[in-house]
Length: 398
Image 1 (cartoon, helix red, strand yellow):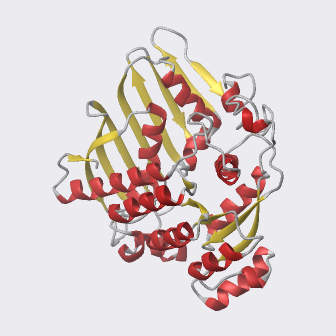
Image 2 (image 1 turned 90 degrees about the horizontal axis):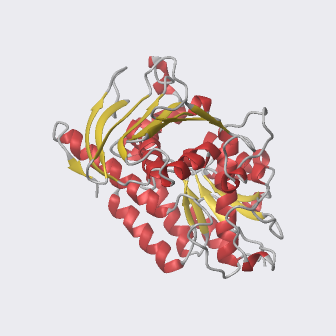
Image 3 (image 1 turned 120 degrees about the vertical axis):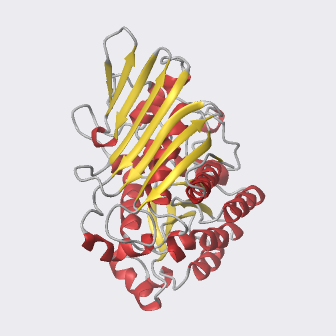
């Protein structure tokens, strides 16, 4: 058993997450910067240790990664297919894998590990095609595997608090939603030459979008996650605002949530002065919420006719017990994106442990982004592409 025996009878939604009987064994598929970031966050959660990987499609580089990752070279595989096959037969095989490859490899990699019965946490977008996303959903259902998707922005403690505030009716009936993700790192023309940028602008690897699929999908997921209102319609325009590129670097969109609630959604990589400019504003008939990732520990709650309230990350400062368990340091000691990633890997670990112990996960115990969220994200991307192709007309999100 991974979970304590006494815990299995009481899934406490407000208490701390339980200590597992051992760290879970994690495999890495993909060896870029985001793989290193996620591995560090997984270790920060104290629930995982990296034991194996398929770090490159180049066999020489894949084996050389053993030195950089402090791993046995026998467990640094030359392909994800080999890794899935070999790890599934080992008594000490991986409990789960993270998939951090370029987009076009998400589907075949995920398919290989699902067919081997191995749990997965996959980067977004889930796939480049809706049909592939649906095929993975079917495999997850038939295999029973845990499948998380890395919508990490939903794992900040104050974002979880924002979701709870909306559900409690503190801002009333929602009447509009605005989300944006503004960055500036692609402003210099030379930026497109960086290796980690080239594939993001290559349709063969990134799919039919670049900015939309990379950061726009984060904003779209966050808007629906906090509001609990599905995105149902969109009208979108793609733009290349900087040096010529094969895919868009900017997009603007009008949105409708749950058929009738209007909103806006936009993302760009060419907004000087914005480094991590993910912002969310939700307004209702009694008040509003506002959050800025560059000030990730603060949530502004405004009830009409009352003084504004700033809720901060930290025990006793407006965070409910359910979300305090995601707080990692005391008040006055800043937290940011590494801790949000660690929260994602904590909830993923809990879901994996529950499955391995043969238990049924209560619906309200975790808010881990799942494969269903990934499928919705791919549908969002497809709708944006379709809308842009028809000069920004309204398109229904499948």
